[in-house]
Image: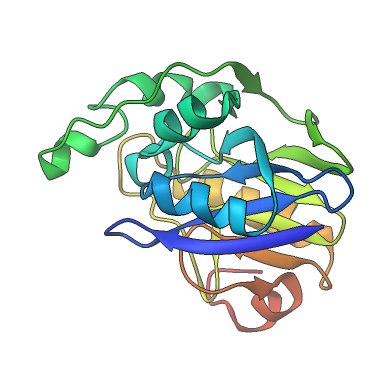
Length: 206
């Protein structure tokens, strides 16, 4: 499995390209901005983008959906409870910064236990609400892509519309920590970490 994480946009949201070495096909998680850079990075890795998955619907994670989709034909997928955020600049909060970012509607809505497969890569969906009502994380082998649910040393904001601190803590403690200490964590912002490290050092965990 090829994993390439690149911060994009003014908020440095992590876009992650997850590729299948055998088939050269890839899933792009959270193409939030800089679509040209995302596309060129995939090409440099020898990968063809076959799916786009948003961990949640905030503008900094969906902003390049349309550009990547139009260039590749890849379908867009998101947790069903965040689906309306794709097409609404008010709900995805881009209007707060004076912009009007919108994505096309989702081609597939994701729920707990769904699997997104491209070649030998299979991302299993776990629902991790709290930062947003429909936030999801994606599990593959010993890796988890957590969006804005869990960061190195912190967790996602819950003071934005639709946020719930109680729901987020349940998601982190009951679902993400249950994966096991060896899991590598690729968050929506900041550096990669591990579940084991966060269990010991993250003040919000446990």
